Image (cartoon, rainbow, N blue to C red):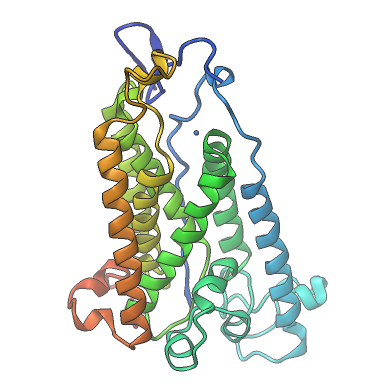
Length: 335
């Protein structure tokens, strides 16, 4: 899709080109649709770009951890009532029977042993580290591939534009925020996966579009596109065995972080080459960043306090369980 501005033809959602000389279990979840293309800026060579290394490093680490999961699991080493291991030629790395884990992965016990999010262990056994460790585990090969492909697709481009120091906190804190919300509402199942962090990146992209509104053309089309992507993925989260609370918590955390970490100087300041007569950031950008920081800090503090005090979010929200699973004639929700 393409669009036009008053001055020149531009790719939809593209940033206004800068002036010359200026130096983007309950298995946790998959984000299924790629990010919108408004970071594909043909003028990128005129802007400062960063060499991405954080996202590729995360991908490599996630793959290594999954291999370690399968080594620890050792399917041939124990019997299963569901039948034989899948891909037995992989020996110790073979997968649990299809009926036990259709995502081609280990048992729930293995995931729990390695750090899956388990409400009882977090609250009653002081294992708060599971709020972080669960984001580095995956329920199966299919789960891993889906998440890592999407991370590469949306994360690399964002890191090229904004660099490690901005993207890494968004990824890590969003994953943590997703775990906190999941722990408050999902208390009868374990949860694993990087989808909370992935949704955080998606939320940050939405915030970046809003806070840097003046430097984009065809903003409405770009905004509509990213909202559709978020809506589709959140809708998929109402299927059983998908932890949509991790998605929602990650998205909200990333959305707030985007206002803080992805600020860009307003176009008028760039055009004026940074002269003091023009403010570097618009007033609304500063206000959004301050409010977002306060809301994020308060949200995480309240969420952690409630979680470690054993609160169940469903006790205070009778309909919230529908956000992660809607029962139909085809499946039931047992969370």
